[in-house]
Amino acid sequence: MIATMTLNPSIDYIIKVEDFKEGEINRTIYEHLLPGGKGLNVSIVLKNLGHESTAFGFVSGFTGIEIERRLSEFGVKNDFVNVKDGYSRINVKMRSKCETEINGMGPKIDEEEINQLFAKLDGLKENDILVISGSVPVSLPKDIYKQILDRLKDKGILFVVDSSGELLSSVLEYKPFLIKPNNLELAELFNTELNSREDVIPYAKKLQEKGARNVLVSLSEKGAVLLSEDGKVFMSDAPKGELVNSVGAGDSMLAGFIAGYLEKNDYKYAFYKGLCAGSASAFSADLADQAAVDALMDSCPDGLIFTLRNY
Image (cartoon, rainbow, N blue to C red; front, side, top):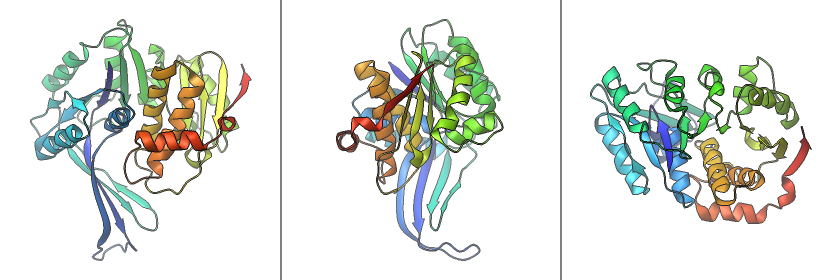
C-alpha cells in the first residue's frame, strides 16, 4: 500500500492575468481548479502512472467536500479526517509577468482529530510506503512529522519525506527511505548557497550521514541529483520543454521516482522516471500522465543520466 499524507490540503485556483497591476481591477485570461497539496499531487500522479494510493490528512467545510469530490474524479482513494472548525484552504496561483502564490490558512484541528489521524495511520503495515509532504497548519504541533514517524518507527514502513527546515531535519533519525529537498531547501538547512548539481553532493551526503537512505534533490531547470543508498551519485539535466505551470512539478518527480522504484527496483530507472514525471507536469497545465512521461522517457537519451562516482 502507498499512503500519502497532506495535513493542509487545498483547492488550488490557478489563474493567468495578462499584466497584473496592484490596486486595480485585473481580469483573468485563464482559470483552472485542482485539488491541491503536495501529498495529493503525489497521489494523483501515482494514479496516472498506474499505481494506487490512499490520501490521508484533514479536510473541512465546503472546500473539503470539493477536495474529496475532485480526488474521486481522478480515481484517487482518500481517508481524510473531517475537521469541525473552519474550512480547507483555497490557494491562488497566479501567473502574470511572474508567478505569485497566495496560500490560505486552513482549518483549526483539535487533539481529538489528531488522534483520529493517528488511528488511521496505525493501519499501515510492513513494506507499505508513507509519503509525508507539505506544510503544517498552525493549529498542529510543529513536531507533528516527528510524532508520526516515532509512532510508526517499528512497523517496517518505508518513509518518504518532502519538506524543509526543522520538519525535515527532525525526522532523519528515523532513517527515511527517501527525502526530496530542492536545492534552495538544502542550502537553507546548511546556511550556504548551492548553484550547481556538483555543489549539492556534499550536503546531500551529510543528510545521508544523519540517517536518510536516499536523497533526491531537485534543481528546477538544472535537473536533479540522487544520492542512493548503494553509494552512487546520479545527476541529469532536465528534459527540454516549455514551462507552462511549475505547481506540482516537484511532487510529480517524487511520484515518478516511487513508481519507477516499484516497477524495477532500480535507482537509476527510478531517478530517470522521476525526472521525466516532474518535467511532464511543468510542461502541462495538468499534472503528469502516463503518455506524457513515456514520451519524455523515449525522447531523452539514457546518456543524460550518469553515475558521477561511487563514494
